Structures are given as C-alpha cells and as structure tokens.
Amino acid sequence: MTSIDSIQTGILDNLPPMARFLSFSLQSEGDLKNCLADLAELSDGHHLVVGLGHSLVLALGQRIAGLKTFPALTAPAIEVPSTPSALWCWLRGDDRGELFHQSRLLESLLSPTFALDDCIDSFTFDSNRDLSGYEDGTENPQGEDAIKAAFQHNAGAGLDGGSFVAVQKWLHDFDLFDSFSPEQQDDAFGRHVSNNEEFEEAPASAHVKRSAQESFNPEAFILRRSMPWADDISGGLNFVAFGHSVDAFEAILKRMCGLDDGIPDALFSFTRPLTGSYFWCPPMRDGKLDLSVLGL
Image (cartoon, rainbow, N blue to C red; front, side, top):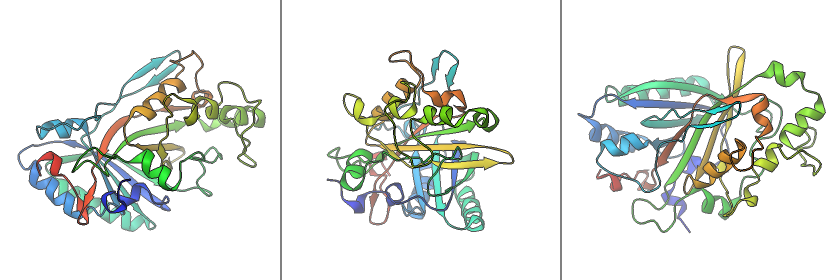
C-alpha cells in the first residue's frame, strides 16, 4: 500500500470550507524547469494540490503512462467538451481573503512561464451537498479503499503515490430543476433528498444507477472531491475525481452519456459540463512535490 507520506494529502483529506481551482496554460518553455522547481518547493500537498497536464509533460520531453487528453464525447442532446490545460492548482482553506492572496502569490510565481486561464471559487454547502440540495460523493471509498482507488501503487519510484484527476465545471439550470416535481428531482438522482437513501424503483436513467461504481467490470471506484461554485446568479458543481488511472472515471462518463446502452444519465436534463481536463498529481517526497520522473 502506498505510504501516506508519498501522497498529496489534500486529495485524501476532508473537503475544506472554501477553495480556489486555477488552470494555467504554458506561455514560455524558456524557464519551465526552474519554474516547476519553485512550484515543487511551494506546494505542501495539503493547502495546495498540484496537477500537471499532458501537454506540460510532453513539453518536458517526458511521458507519464496513463496520462492523456480528456476525451470530447457526443451523444443525442449531450456534448461533453474537452478543454485541456497545462497546469491545475487546487488551493484549499477556510478564509476567502487568504485564498485570494495565495492565488496572487501563485500566479506571480508561475509568471511569465504560465498564464492563468481560469479561476473558480468553490465552497462546501450544507454538509457536502450539491447546490441542487442532494448530497455529493456518498459512495466514496473510505480508508484504505480510498487510498487504493485514488493513488498509484507499484508503478515505480517517482510514480507511487501519484494520482490522476478528472476535472469538469458543470453548470446547473436551476429554473428548470425547480420546475421538476419533488418526485422527478428524486428520480434524476435515484435518492430521496430528505434522507439521501437510494430507492430501487428509480428509473434506469437515475444517476445512482448510471454511475454505480461496483456495477462496472472492472469495478470503477474513484475518489470524488467535488465542490459547488457560484458566480452572480449562475452556479453548479466543480466536479473533481481522483483515481490511480483515468479508466474508472472514463467508464462512468461514457455510461452517463448513454454510449453503452443508449440510456443517458438524467442529470443531463438540468445540468451540463462546460469544461473537461485530465491531470497527473505527482507524489510527495521530503515534504515537496516529487518531479523526479520528469527529470527535475
């Protein structure tokens, strides 16, 4: 089993009250190695979780087995976009002002090698509920099962303790969702909002049936760390899922789109993804990011 000392612990820890998710594009390769070395020193793996995109790894002349570009998927009335980025940073905390200043420090450290493309302010809502009111991440693996699902094992030095993450920003249509009857809302999720209990009579399109991790072969366990976002009067879910590979997430997403059996997930009736990216989150060594497999 992967040692806890070798992982970015923010992946495994409980969700913080507040967070900022930042995505960067690569602007210049001239000082790239020094910039990443500085980032490795800054990241503690807890308050700052870092993920590297496929294009960034290729720019270093390296490859990480299993890291690839997020797939764009299309199904009837469904579009899942692919919006790859070079670098992803998850700032975790409990003070919005502090997160603001930390993100300024991070952007300054990375400039001019990287340019900030997107910044999403997120938060926890009513004991880890989505803004729809339904609990999120109920089926997350726990304890050693979470470590097994989320982190690489027996992959070799510089890889063990690493993790792959899938990130999507989902936009909810709250006016449409509010127009659903309580029964229609419960049917979309396959759970009762009142007690979070699954019910067998839910339709085949219910999210819990589309995404039941144990129903795949092989089983598709992922560690979800999603958080709501809101901007003016728009909002949704910043979906974040970690795995020892991207295979489990990809299997779930394809079934949600109905690409397996023609039954789309009912969530698509009121929400849609705006972005989609994969990143590799390096392991830790001696309290900083271990970038040794990238020649750093």
